[in-house]
Image 1 (cartoon, rainbow, N blue to C red):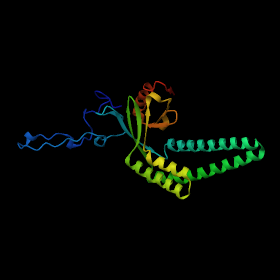
Image 2: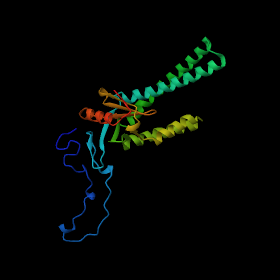
Image 3: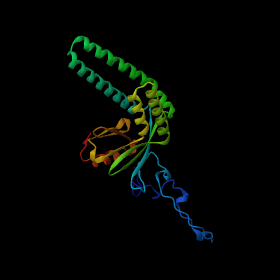
Image 4: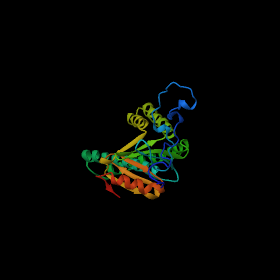
Length: 251
């Protein structure tokens, strides 16, 4: 946090990058009366956010983080984790079905292992092809706008990441429809509709800091929010989140 006066408020105690239209016109300065114009309501588009964590007039902390997709492995590790869980669930279901029908034997076990191995090869191949393509489309950086207050923290994609992500997700949905695979189509549509994630502190179960990746993991029962922050503000954000999560296991 930058220290000068109140360290949580911008130095000039005003809205950084404020639109001039938000300032009322002084009719007496020109000697002419001007018709009153409706004032614009302040919104986050008028704020000039940067990579430092600051408290803004809306009563919330805001900051922007640019994650280099090949220098910081956080995103790709999360994708690999998700793929591993998918493969594990499929393997368990197959094992249960085979056991209920024929019992466990060498032949059935070998068949399951072959199918699981094939899935792993296919998914890794898709990851190797798709991830660099996505990284190139977003300029090799995943840019996120974080919004935090005493109730929770929101992980929100910026306009560019949101636009590229929607196009890729909709393409996935189209491929699923054309190939008559409703699961793939549904996953694509779901991904296209989700451009932000909010973690409510009251239901967070685990908070874990991974400092070398500039990452604070904020996990609920069925969701994992990844909060990224620069070194200068890392301790502040980590302490703030930890103190506001009464049910969480802190690591």
